[in-house]
Image (cartoon, rainbow, N blue to C red; front, side):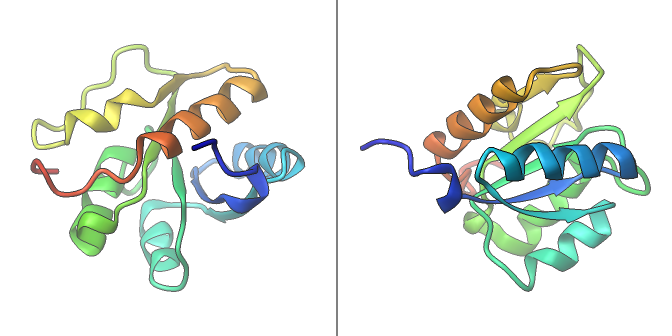
Length: 137
């Protein structure tokens, strides 16, 4: 089975820096993805109640919740329906909480990155499928 066309994928992109969020929205939209944005973890959790997403793209360093806490809260809300996640960060060695599912770090992209690298990370995450609740988040 091949990956669906990018247009078929709906992304939730979360970053608390407005300029970066706008840049990610524009970049991914130009690549053919459907993009919904959120400026924070709490706003992202709100967006989850109104739509279904194929992949989540989250910055690690955000306030009031960092990307890891945001995903943990999303997992509590969505359970086995949690979409695949791509983390973006300038941190080469993230310090995730010990309860975070280790599979979440399979799709971790360091800044700066090329748009093609982000698209590839999104496709790999989508191909890997939902995380499910096989381990604690």
